[in-house]
Image (cartoon, rainbow, N blue to C red; front, side):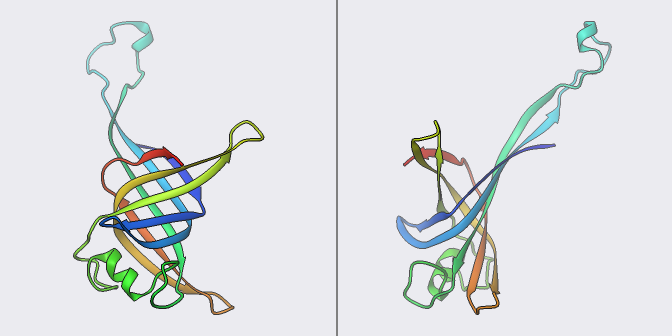
Length: 157
């Protein structure tokens, strides 16, 4: 059983080898912690332990997705062929040779009703998939899906 924690925001930065290769929008991120039952077998030691399952946390992981606009070669705002190639470590549709990227997911909040605070989540991730769409106004977008590898950290901006 996993315990989910979800986050969302409107700016994501993707870096590969310390170089920004994409700025994306409308991101979401989910972090989960798996649990395993560790209830001892046999009779209960006390009445308060009787029939109550004990759980332990095991692995923690995270996934994220972010959208970008397809606005042509040479731009760093969305996804052109070079960005797609950089993100996948291969050609745009060949995801078999993945290269991890650093994903920074920015957000802001109001903590005391007046002061706006900024921060971001940061972690290394693999590109797990891409999907393209076009709306009624011929605006093309691409959605990237990422699978986190290692820790997802909160940092103040």
